[in-house]
Length: 397
Image (cartoon, rainbow, N blue to C red):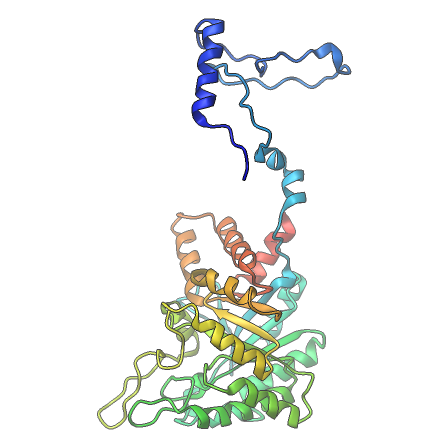
């Protein structure tokens, strides 16, 4: 395919070169030379000083290489010109947690993140994001405990926390792109994305019925993109039909197409107090979400989910989590013409924060590398709690 110079041939050429010269003693720092000296008389006069090599560096003939990839990495200008994947703030969606109070409440397991007061803290945080170039947010409400029920009717309350937050955001920033979460777990006393039967089975079709009501209520509040994160069968088609029937044909759907039953969601569940509850003898509650979220060991299964979501009317397809599932991002990218999003989830964020706090990583460099990897894998959009920080770092570069 490509002709390459073997290492043995290079070693032989070095040996021959040294025999012809006689074994040279290590030299002192001198201008860089090759086997054939450069005739400076053939070049214009210059003030540039030739670089020096370290004392003791061997004198060897140039390798017989037609192609040297490092030539395309030799300067910052060249590297930037040939960079294949470029991050911009336009790639980011900033997830925000809101609560029905005045003061912002720090989230212990997510340093730097808070439950934002929906009237003030939320607006201030989004204004800061927009100033950094991030004009897309997704809203996650911390539902008051007394409003949670086994059937989660609060999810479609027209004056609920999510609906009020969406409306205020659109009133304050009309051109802000607002994404919303559609699932029952923030409103469900059992902590699941759907209603749970007494035998521990998560009910699919009954849940989808409420998800449609939830989606329509969010669209009425002003949502631009509805994001079903529940992983119930058939919910994309049902929600698309419900939105269209109410006149919301312009409202898009970003489906959590490949949402895995991951261990990386812990800090998020702390933020919303939405972890699965403990069951009892009279009412079994699944300890995790393996019954409806994807198995971390599966890859081909995402193609089945993707085919269904695309056929049912999804506008964007998401992979969650991002960092441990770069192969899934690439698989979806290669098998659809729809945009792909990926969620750098709370556990990924908190791990980076912890490593940086301990001095194990340079936070800025590690975060930007993780985000470029997600985009390189094929994500057009990345949801990240680092969105605003990353956007500011990019502006400094």
